[in-house]
Image (cartoon, rainbow, N blue to C red; front, side, top):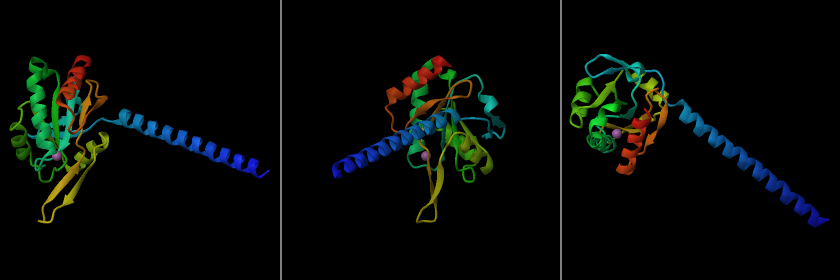
Length: 197
Ligand code: NI
């Protein structure tokens, strides 16, 4: 009788575990699908010359979008440097993709600073800014994280999403290039994006 009861309890625990596992897994997949489907959307920003720039200006051409700030010590300069290399390697195909750098530090990154910054990489990389509210709005659309972190000397740095967002010509999300991703794989992803439009 005792053994039967123990076996029954073991079965109950196993069943509960299986159901919980299946439920958790389903939830995870659901979140991933949601994240992919939800990235991108309408926004209003400004070019560094002050002219407005919205999602309509992107229409029809695939693009890579990166979010950062000009004072970034490593991730942003490395990423923009690598992006410049991809544009060079693409040759004539480089004009089939747009590359955008959006500041997450609109208070400190003046249009002049951004223009200066991006021009020290490849001239085809377009710098974008906006009001703090506009930047918050596009961060939400692209599921971008960024947060100011105070430094001891009174200055601040910004932790931010380091992935490059790859978007199709219709504005839908195609994937990301992760920080530190192999350069050849990154270039392949971009060629793939260009060939599928
Ligand atoms: Ni950065």
